[in-house]
Length: 109
Image (cartoon, rainbow, N blue to C red):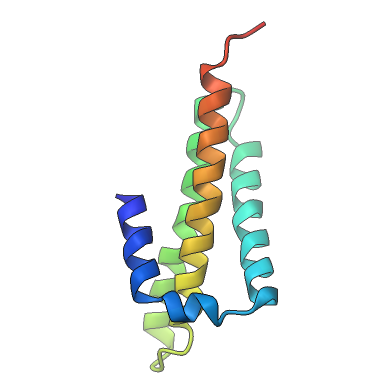
């Protein structure tokens, strides 16, 4: 479902993504990675709990940003930034998830 949403957002907001610029993309990537790292570090000793908390922490931010935008701003100027964040966050979560799957399925030595 998350992948489908990512593709839909990319199709609808491709122009905004391409026009975002490098500094906002780097800031967004830093926030997404920091969210994953914080969730991972606070997830406890069980690797599956760590992965769950990290992914939940990283994926809640676009929804929260959308709620704040809708409640506080009447113009849609901020929406492209949220679209870009959702895409960058989805990519970061996908990379983290694939890393976690490899870690969880590898034999313990």
